[in-house]
Amino acid sequence: RISIEVANCNIYSSNDDVNNNKTEEEWRYTWMPGAIQRILNQGGIQGTGQTLSHIQDAKDACEQFDWKEIVPMTNLNPGYQETRMHYLNVDEDVREKVKGFTHVRVNYYPDGGVARLRLWGHQLEIQKNDDSKMSSSSLQTESSSVVLVPSSKPYHHPELSTYTNGGQGLACSNKHYGIPENLIQPTYGKDMGDGWETARHPDRPPILIRDPVTNLIDNPLMDWAILKLGMGGASVSSSGGGGVGVGVSRIIIDTKHFKGNFPESVMVEGCNANTTSNTGIVVASDEDVITDKLDWFPLLNRSQMGPDQEHVFEHKLGQLMNCDQNVTHVRVSIYPDGGISRVRVYGQPANAE
Figure (cartoon, helix red, strand yellow):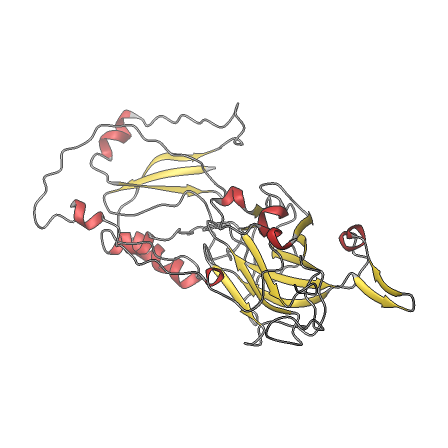
């Protein structure tokens, strides 16, 4: 369901809701980057809605303006071709009452996504002067310099997970919006469809409560994807380049493009499909890995994620565990659901050239 309100102000509303990370106080006021600055400063660059305090700031700023409802709470249908279009009329008396509005606020109940919002009407002439808060200069986006992301910089260990080094996306618990193979591409994601995103977990409760100690959602619901590392996996016994004695040395979780539907947190585990017995090395099959017949051990404890960014975890900073173990496969678990663009696992290769 949605409802639509209008006001004479300068606010930017999102077209995709943060559907995974809300607590009881957050559920109604979820803001994409830009809301606070555009309300308070009459324009500006995108901001943030990652925390409860940021969302509360946006709520308080929004309450400065008089919002008038033009479309009451309305049921929406799924986005299939035959049901995706919704045409909503605004009564004449309502149009008279809201003449001169500048911005629209769309409310989702309780969350979800809308692909397009199109509004038709008559443009009002605006007299511009030096003091006009709605001048074109006030709405221009502030330019920013290009910043190199961590994965673009040289690193002393290869990216074992990428398919160019033999990595494979084996399986996942849910492939509603993507497949695990997308996670191991060497390029940066071009859009959300170029990553791995799950449907909402069917058992997700209506209100998600945070653990006061960890600040993570106090719920075990999650989805997972299993990746097979290339170059024979990460080996602590290889004599290849720097960091001898370290298997996995760095993990990058990239949520590029996932601004409203990134997972609340991510955990990464590893396993070694190559075991030693009296007869030599026994290699477990990929099916054995997928069906959980091997022992998994943690590489990265459950860690909070943010929107549209690379999250870097380093062995040398004490952020990874069991780096003294050989690893052939990794299992990436997202809580409780959502989407990520890339998973990059670096380490000392077993098959070093």
